[in-house]
Image (cartoon, rainbow, N blue to C red; front, side, top):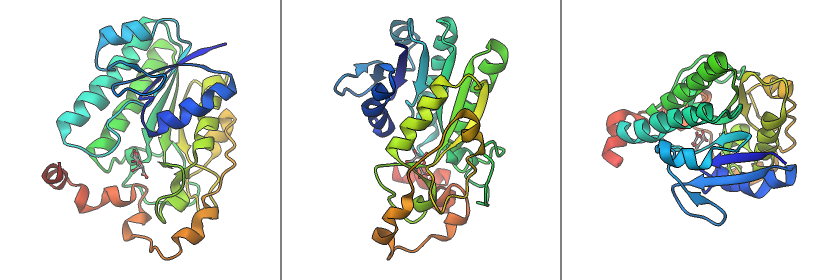
Length: 259
Ligand code: 15L
């Protein structure tokens, strides 16, 4: 059985995956800075800590990150330095495959359009989105220079259920999230890929072509939650991929003032 290291395993997406990936036959080694059942405490910013947990794993699912916008030092430390340390540890210990949790916010200022390709060029909407562009570029570098197989998942809204009207299009169900990570862990076709992390939503505008190429066929559709959100109105910012993150509230000064 192959062993997969999951970073950020105590977080929202990490918890979804911890509960599902073993059913696909993966043996998990889980780390996080926060403690949780079955999760070892380890900081991805520490090369020494990574040298303890990376040897012997066949692949890494890298989720650990500051997950929303924050002041630059926070983003820089966890999402840039941490991501670098993670890929470096993978290289040092001969790990051949990394599944990287990127985000739609890497391209947040892109207008939504039907069948928008996953590998649409970077247009980060926040420092957070910019850090995801960095992670995708790191992945490209390790794939090209060291032959690592790297999948970057531009995740939409991964949650038990869509929290707002935008998410009727951008939702990634926990089960589809596990399906997507599973195919990225086993696909022979994978060299380097950017894939949308999105379910089979009726209102989806993001293309599933890149996912299909790896064998990802989502089954959930956010539409079954639409009646619960019937009274909610779409926001003007929903015309852009990143939604609310593209608004003035997410400017550098505005975020610092709330921090
Ligand atoms: C993300 O990347 C965030 O981690 C999450 O909190 C949501 O904001 C999500 O994107 C989204 O766009 O809905």
